[in-house]
Image 1: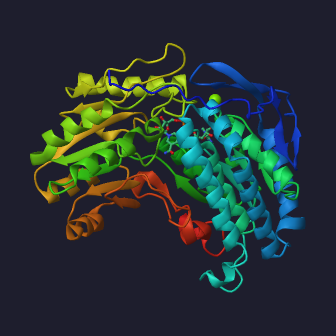
Image 2: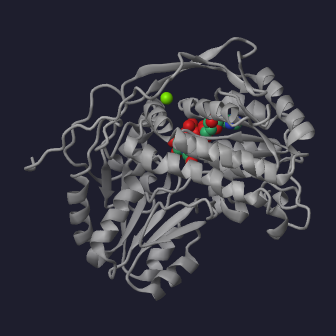
Image 3: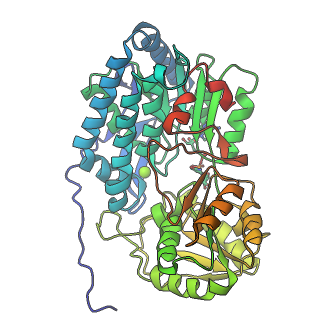
Length: 484
Ligand code: NAI
Ligand code: MG
């Protein structure tokens, strides 16, 4: 008990005007699914029903792809690039105007703290549209040849961990490059994508340029296998990514795949320890650890390990877990019962294989899906918790004695999405960064994102890059093949 307790500071739900039912967004209108099926989306912090959304099947996907093709052929591919850019600017500005509403809906549907949806997800999503709006009429000066051409119709499938932000990562570059899209949101977090559909209407975006079909993996597979899409852009599990790669292998479709990770966060003996502790906390507990680039393997130099762990535990005891709508909350709800089961299952193997579990004393709400911030020490490289993506607030701690051992351990993974280096010595940071097999490497910080910076992985973390000039290349006909 500290002298001063935090008073509750709940954000109001009043701004979120969630409809009881949503159709599919096809051809600029909300339409009922052809078979009339729907599914529920709930608030994972309370298990309350938020809305029923349309379940799209193969025939709905076909209608959406046709609408995207017609919009591509008749309108979007003929429109001067400058005009395309104007629509993207308009969308970005409307997202900013409606930012509070988006943040509330995201937090209700996903379970993430309002502080994160308000300060990270929504501003970054708008930033992606602003950034790509600027590219729309400059593609011919960007080293893609004198007349860069779009691919056509792109099928996009996104996960539930950053619903609106992943939508922005997908839709903004695709439209800037002159493509039209069919996007399938994740089944547990469809609402901000449907709100985005309203934004497209509000911006006067020509009908069919953006189509949004809600559903599950079957809906996603129908999109991947539709014969008239030119590219698949996917973010999600490595398992589904591999299935997608197999199903498009004998086709002309190109792909970008953003898959899993098991990032190493390396703390050297000369690091500024207090800052490193903040970075470790941000690396693994941001967004409940539902982050593909989460710093889920902490690898500390042995002679500072005790100090780091002591400070880390003290800091973890200050994490406020609970109501995601409270502006004080640091760690919100786990996104779904399935994900909670997965976190529990893999974490239990940590106990069984002999690692030592520690969590601060936190009181978890009785309703909804929750997991306390957790660390495992005494982890070895063969433990499942050191190898597999847990995708939750669970940190595995390993140690090293020499810098080369640190690199070896860091690279001993099937993934290679991100890594972190904590050291006061610039030369050591550069030395380590050169050898780490990871797409993004942060030095003395973690989980920092910018639309201008390419993001993507090595090995089983995926194909291609998203963001920046590199990401744009994946949406242009002359360049996209490099992604396959
Ligand atoms: P998932 O990969 O099954 O789902 C991601 C998206 O793909 C969803 O929209 C889903 O409907 C769609 N999908 C599922 N099966 C498909 C198929 N056969 N063809 C086309 N689309 C398909 O991920 P899930 O089940 O939600 O999470 C499982 C695990 O995957 C998590 O525990 C986590 O470890 C990992 N994951 C990693 C993410 C990342 O960003 N790296 C994001 C989400 C999950
Ligand atoms: Mg939900």
